[in-house]
Image 1 (cartoon, rainbow, N blue to C red):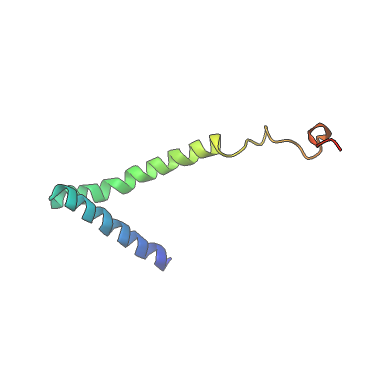
Image 2 (image 1 turned 30 degrees about the horizontal axis):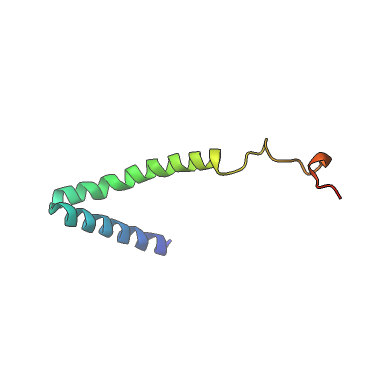
Length: 74
């Protein structure tokens, strides 16, 4: 848990630093720092849903281990 908390602080500081470097504004950098994790959370949820749908083989499409027609011929 300590490692996750420390990384969270690094992430926030990095986000703020990049925002400030790009805009030169403390207010905009702060807004970016607050908004970015919210947008990233929604994007991650959508990514997970897309991954489940397209990248992971579907159970109904998987070949049953008892399906003899799917076994290689000897």
